[in-house]
Image (tube, rainbow, N blue to C red):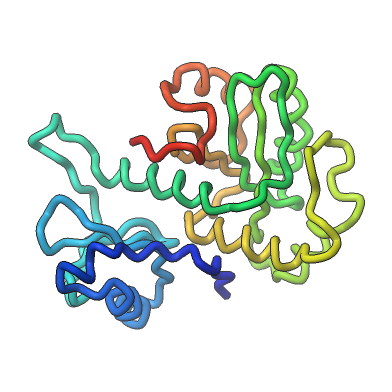
Length: 239
């Protein structure tokens, strides 16, 4: 089941003027492949379009008759990996669509910011949540976003994430409100589906890279200290 983020399908207006209907292309691919399409964008190759899906990036012609899987390299610019850069930008763009930010563990002073996609049930997730204060103490602010775990139903996630006593051991700036919690939770789960978050926990770094699975505070700090990017992962669409 898909929990689609309303208003988050970014279908490029460029395509209409170019003689291609992005909404029609989106619908065509979804019907033919059975995958949710969240993004339609141009590529440097005339007539070839990038589709952002929960299964990863796809490339297609304007009619959706031919689909390519793989990596696009820019040989004219030192073999720049355009597919990887597009995925980074898609994550940053998605996080910028969140709206009101709620479950944040803020560090003062702040050196870095991270986004953590997590469930409350998996073993690695609980360990990660228990170690967040150690990150906070070392200058890392963390934004928490819930994910629907494997084989879980939305009602199960609502029962856990919307509980009044959720994560009281963490000094979060805000928590999911009792009123409207279900809608916010569905929105966040849709976000995780847009980005294809499957391994838990998963981290989105300031430059848009995705780290899957458990990472110790030391590992995360070592990575963050070597990233040349803005502190806020949703403030820029740098590649």
